[in-house]
Structure formats: C-alpha cells, structure tokens
Image (cartoon, rainbow, N blue to C red):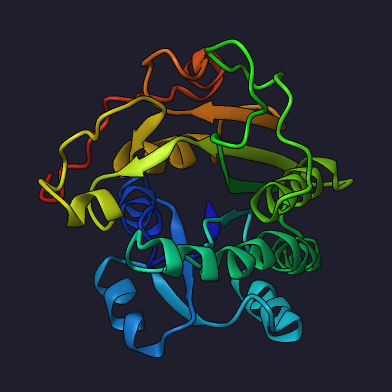
Length: 246
C-alpha cells in the first residue's frame, strides 16, 4: 500500500517508517525540516517537506502521494520534560490536534485515501475505576490538552467516507523520549500506563490493514488501561521491540 505518514521523524514515526518499509509498503513521510529528509531517504521512505498548517501545500503533497492510508503521528512537544517548556508547548500541541488534524483529513479526502490512523493519548480519562476501557469518559474539553484530544478523536472517527482509527497511546518510553534522556533508553519508568515507542509503532503498522473504525487503547497490560480490543482486533503486542538490523 501507499502510506502518507505525517510526523515521520518523530518518536513513533521513526520506528514506524522502518516497520512499514519492511512490510512492503511505499512510505511518503512528512517532516517540517528539509535537513531530516536524508534520514527518511536512508530509512527507505520518500521525504515530503511540509507544514501541517499550510493547508494548500498539504493537499498538494497528499495528491502527489496518492495514499491508500494516511497516518497522523504529529505532535509539537519540547525536547525535555521541564515544566516551563512543557506548559508553553501545550497550546502548540493542541493546535496540531485541532487545526492540523482538520487539514490532514481534508488532504486525505482530496487525495482519495480511505483510512486514517491517528495518534491520541490515553491519559486524559476522567477519574474513575481502573483499568480504563475505551468506553470510559474522557476529561471534559475545558483544559488545553483535553480540548485537543476531543477535537482530534471526533474528527478522525466522525468524518464520512473515512475509515478512522484512533490509537490512544499510553505514556511513551524508549528511544527519543524524555524517559530515555533521564536513564537507560529502554528502561521502563516507575508507575503504570506506559507503552514503548516501538510497540506504539507496531500498533500503527497493524492498523494499516486491521481493525474497524474506532478507538483503541495502546499500552502495557499493567492495570491502568484495558488493551484487549487492540490485542484482539489489531494484533497489538505490548512486548514488541524493533530489531534494527533484522
């Protein structure tokens, strides 16, 4: 299949490019940085330099790519978990989830794509008994992050003619994450509700050809989130790790 992967050089995008290429898909990966184009080429993808907020340019990229599936792995987060930096980035990340998602859906439809897979988060559930299933209520869209999540999920799953799959990822660890910068790259942090970046990418790979439109929790089976649906319908494996040289 032809895959347009938005956010191809991000924490999940990097392993996902490798997995998609290995599976025989033709990958067109977007990045805002021309300097990162060579990285995508080396990984076997076709780079497309575009900003998701440039709606006209994004439509042209999508039409040129002619994707069967569009994968939305875009975020706008700082390189550290410093509270000041993180707070400053929340609005930018919400803008991607609201405005960026809208632009990406329009581009997908203009290009004739039939399926979209989008990254969401599994840590905006409203307080309640654990583990949280996909049917549990989210926090109301009063805060910045929750507002972005509601907008993204409603748009992806509610657009006529588009088979929309939302992956609610747990807190990430692994290569390129904040947790990797503070310790061993693959060391699991304390607490629950986490997912390794490689396993998150594997879920997106599986969703290219499996699963019905809807929402899936993607995390480790540690008592915080119910992941039975993703396991059953997507073939998600929370223990999956990418072997770069295999």
